[in-house]
Image (tube, rainbow, N blue to C red):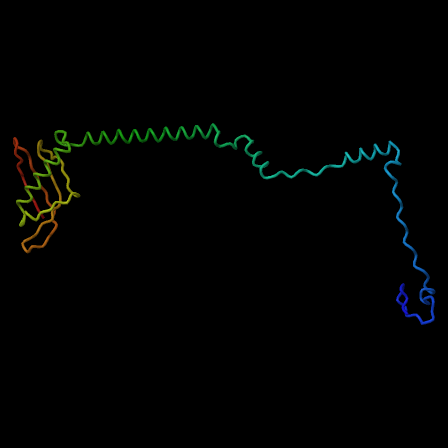
Length: 204
């Protein structure tokens, strides 16, 4: 038989544990003192407790992300959309760009007007001059019927002589062996009455 208190092995005829007799019963734990009920305290002490509770510092409230964003927007200088300084900068930049564009347009028109285009040569006049220059080039080719004049690279301008024009360009035509070759050409011509006269033709 085993003692349920200390675990000592008792004899079959023992009614009490020998070890427990020698050591004595363990002291009982002291009971917790009873706290007085709030209803039993005097009124003055209750008021002191209430005052002490009010004096305890409260934990600061942690601001949330929306509150922080709202606070930043409310600060002066953070609203860029309604900032007067930003609006003035945008207006000044737009005005500067507009002035630069106007100056560029005026300069381009002045350069165009100052360029010698010989008797205010227009588009139709220029096409007429280039056509007669190509006719003059055909007469200096080995195979005029195979001549093809590319649209790009053709230029027409007036010379220092009044009524005289200089036309340059390229032509694709067959040579004496039947091979297509590209050549450059320069024609100087002027108009006499209703006829265009080629002063010089050079194909190279």
